[in-house]
Image (cartoon, rainbow, N blue to C red; front, side):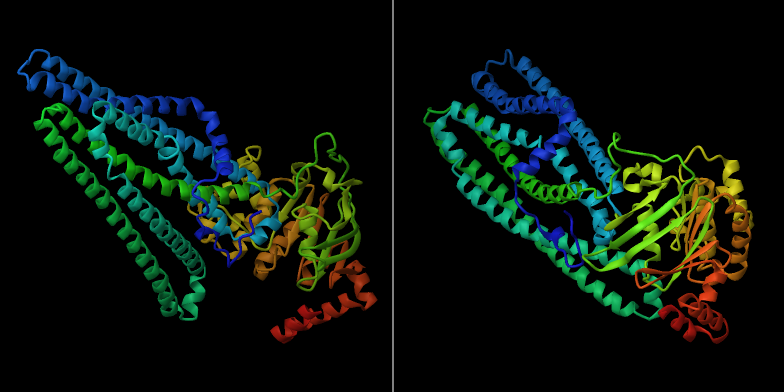
Length: 607
């Protein structure tokens, strides 16, 4: 299970260079595209064979024609050379295009799988995992796998085929000179091992520092108003300068290893050529080696060392892909805690929507219960207000009713059916929810009201907007309902965002309207508009309203007062005042708050 926390360093860990278990799982994503991958593999085999031909054709041209003066047939040999080049170009194109396109299709499938899984995970999972780290799974880690699919896992065979093919041809042509040409391989192995070890560590540092830069920027851009208000610009700049400097130094260090490795391979390749010319030249003068064979050996040796450097680079791709795949599969393996029941056991009550909480207990963690032995019912068409101090468990009731979380003990029923036996879509479609923290998506005003539901017409959107009096400010927008909405609704006030959220809930015509502090951040005039609309809209509709201000729920049929995780009092506004209990005390404090200000407000919250 993914359990990333603030101190987590899993983005810096590269893990094994190769993990057979992870590779088998990755190959499952390749299986649906096996035809395309087979086509690319065939092109790689053909290309490897063709690339062995030019040096050998050069040998034939020198030994059979140029050295002997027999020019007949040389033009035909040249045509064969041209055909080999053209076919090599075609196969190179087929291989590159097929692998890149197939890689993108595999990545598309993988991203869809991750996104589908994220949508099914319960809210407790998101309580434990930072959003930025989850975004890294879908973006950076998946992009790393794209490199593996597009240029690593299949094309590595081209380098292997080339190395094996060249070695075989060299030994067939002349085993003595083949040993000379390959004599530098031990040195190449040492250089390659040095590069892989140091490049791995350097890559780990760069990757970790990039994660730190992203996290720092995300946090500070989001909280820019606080940074500027408390004049933290210089301090934040200093912190960013430290992280950015460390990233630059780590990147420069990685450049050093690359700058040493590739020229070293070139130098060793040049040493091999020099050895071939030294020994092969002597054997040619002695007549034991043809001149064309000497030239072919030089050409083959130049082609031999290029795949070695390519394989070293693919090793780094494989290593980072193994780490990314481990994190991705850890996410995909996270169990879905809240699921719809099997179709055979699912039940969708068709009654009016009688809601009952029966001895419900709930704790977000361990035995620290935020709800203890809660029992109450909401009759169809009834208007219920829920009040209490912060942390009393008011919002938790709604989360449990929607099955965002699972009850620890007891049960919640609708028309006698346990909500755990109802399909999630059927359960949640009965509710229209307006939260205190309103989330608007990028798009238009109309898009944010209907949320992609094509069954909600433009007329329905207009009626919902007018019903909550949001048309007062929407009509003033340049394009009305078609006006664009910035990220998170940044161009709208808090009250306007809440009105749009309210219109969104009403457009779906829910059986039960749930308001969670829906008017807490709205000015008095806007709140009055909503209250006027609610008197009409709550008719023939069950309503559950969570409120901090008692004035919001005074006209409710029933008010539930929660205090320290328990349901302490319930009844109408007048009935609770007559009882002169906690509700009466809270009412007096809030009434005094209007006259005495925020000090009394803190006392009311403490109650």
